[in-house]
Length: 404
Ligand code: PYC
Image 1 (tube, rainbow, N blue to C red):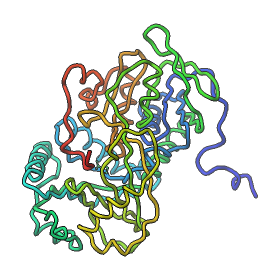
Image 2: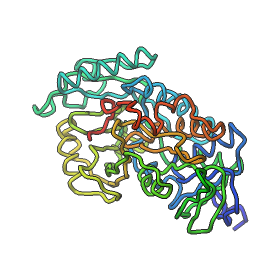
Image 3: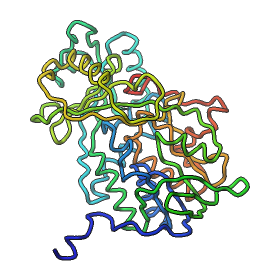
Image 4: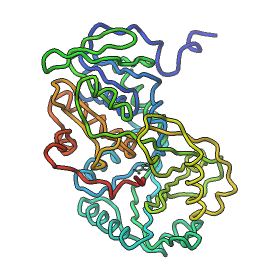
């Protein structure tokens, strides 16, 4: 084989760690890679190491159901996720890599009066902020999703829905790899299979990171590790109100394209879309108890199938191909925790719960800005860690697609 055939497609073999980096990013998922990309691209900061205990995008980035939307409940949330949707729309061009971004339209079904009231609330906040969201009736749902049983087998009929036209799906691995390649080509070092074992401080400031491949010194550390956040924050003695719950998902065998929209039922606790490969990608509520594990269970598939079949009886004929779980780092107000912390030089990108994939571009971009300027970007200031002590919460539970 010629030399080019032997070269890895994206990254050469890992080099030894350097003794010093300006910035260490802990976590090589979509968020970590996006932060590295924007640090290099927009701020010229390239003496950066991304440390990933497994492989690129192997955590929650590769374990979600890839839904992108901005139909949140609070102005802070809407503004933040709308910026992300706009960044997502241009990513394939930015990367020169197809991330299979596909705008589908997103229905959140309401089966009760109170659910409809929440949909109306979200629609009004969204419209006020220029986001396309509206409450629609059964007739419109039936014309857009003709294969769905709106009567839910007589159990809890659909009364209406929140329709969000910009709702989209994308290829999650391509997002992580696109950011990683862009960062790498600009000089960022990506160290896979490198586990952080400690964080060193001097006074009130971060000064280095210990890993299972050696020690490094650095000026800034940002933790972007979602379900592993408590393990990292413990190293620096920072307390957060995050609790970890598994969130499971699964796909069916691929079938011809028939489902053009994303359908979420908050009351039945299911969500489904059809991937560009033809698989139905489905998920349900988070698991009922705190657990730091990515094991998957039969309870999940059984419960999910029960609800799915109420809405889509024909799915009973499809084979389930794969199931998996991620570790959701959930906060009390269902909004993330981002930005500076009481420890100088240590930053957080956490609390991503069940809403992290859709924030990948905006979290990377705003965290890169925050690191470069050592002050919280205005879009993430509402999500600062100190909001819990200040009782200044950003209540987004009503906009979480996933039951909790
Ligand atoms: O927030 O859109 C969402 C979502 C869907 C599945 C998990 N989270």
